[in-house]
Amino acid sequence: MSDDQFKKPEVYLNLAKQNFKFSSAHFLIFDDQHAEMLHGHNYQVEVTIYPKHDAKFDGQGYFIDFAAAKKIIKQLCDRWDEHILLPVKHKDMKFKTSADNKNYEIIFRDRFYSLPQNETIWLPVTNTSVENLSQLFAVDLMQEFQKYPVGSIEVTIEETRGQSATCRL
Image (tube, rainbow, N blue to C red; front, side):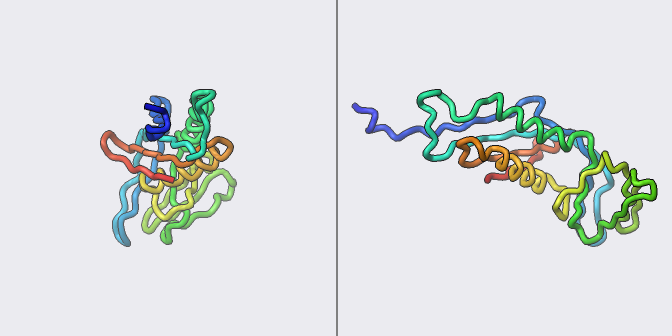
């Protein structure tokens, strides 16, 4: 039997390292009256990387170096680590810079927060749900992977054990 008679197997990488994590505060907004209190999670990130269909890795035995992929994923985790994540696109989220230019003065409905600018990240979403976080992470990760023969990725972000969302690009 020749090699031509076998279908080429699908090969992909799974990366779920212990240090692919970030600890962040957020709150979900449910409707016009209900929202969670500000709280935090120790998020865990898992990434599956699929090669482009025409990727050639028979010669070297791989299509992306684990070390390069791990470095990129960890850098993306680190940017949200120990920060407060807030949705800049939600209609009820209002903020301005404090007089000393060090804090954000935030009004969300009947709540007032004064948060340090260097600890606050405004995300381009209407809610800081795990679904939106996985999508933002995946889009940014795919942008970083453009220089590699990566065809698609899946990013799973778990906010608590057994509770996660996955975005496939």
